Length: 470
Ligand code: FRU
Image (cartoon, rainbow, N blue to C red; front, side):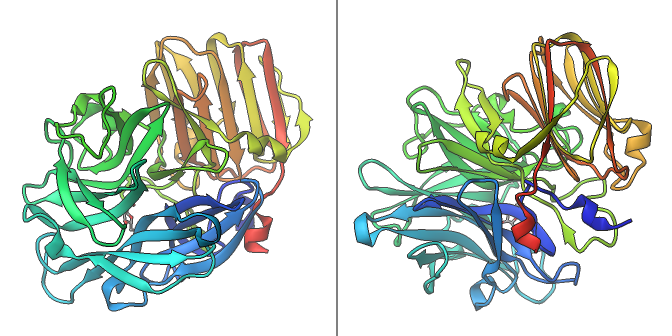
């Protein structure tokens, strides 16, 4: 069997090698830039990560430009870790700044938490996202508060309406509590720590990839707490990704209270979602892209012998709902990849051509279930929406995924993006999302749809990624 069958058509993946977190997301003069943690020499052991680079003008046809930021200075010897992009200046002076973390592990007998690690925050300026200027170290461990361990990383930077610069850094403190540092600056170069944001009760030992999201004037703190397996809703996972809505009128630049831990909401209920990053593009939408992988998981991330590992989610458009929940919908540009429509009939067996489809089911009246190849099912039952690998699916290639559920009173619509080896499920207008990898082996996709629904449609999707591995 050729492993090319699992290359995706509308999920960003590396041409070869390893990918994790999305980095430096931005749109600049029409071009979307998606950088990502990248180790092209994977599976060679010990290959440090840098930033890979993909671009697109339409969010569906992508090009991959290989490694953009290399771990080639002493301040990032074990990795040019995650970070963000900021647009600065106006007119001819307009350009981009990339902020990221340099990771260094000193050789020796260290725990790499309290000893033996360096975490510097670096800056690179770029006129266009392609040409990169010199690297500058802006912050080192001695610049962080004394209660921080050596785990301080993943800068997210923004400039407020008054021109003040702000930075969030994810951190682990000496008591093993995850938290966020807030820094401010007049110029984005010289930074001072102004505050530490803690949860009101312990909530993991480390918070990675903090992000600030503003929707309709409401601010959210997104982050990835690690050490969460004891929380019943974490499905036994060590690491999760979610967001805290801030109180009405509050912003992260001035917020000086403890974050109510119980207000945390998972971004995604699936098996493969972590380290999301958001950005506001030129037409003003806020888009989120996540990594469809996990730092630690009790299941296989990919079949053996693939020359690449992991992918990103599709770009998801974020909107704030009246109750503060953030809905996520696939960017409407994806409809541009629709090829021919194929029959999708409820209460019948549908045979679709291959595994690259957009399934849209609306007007759902319970009960509802949708099964793919008798391996993966999406079921609405007993007040829950469940993504479940059948016994056959759980034992198949990339094995070990079982089931994930989310409580929901009613189910109105389900959209399933099936992309060779990535599946994303959006329900109830994107209020509930599940992302999972799935490695089907059949040439056709058999879809069983059970329930009463006035509208079920399926489109075969084109390949917008061919430019990334040609
Ligand atoms: C999250 C993360 C980040 C770090 C990067 C390294 O998955 O651990 O905290 O910057 O990955 O690849």
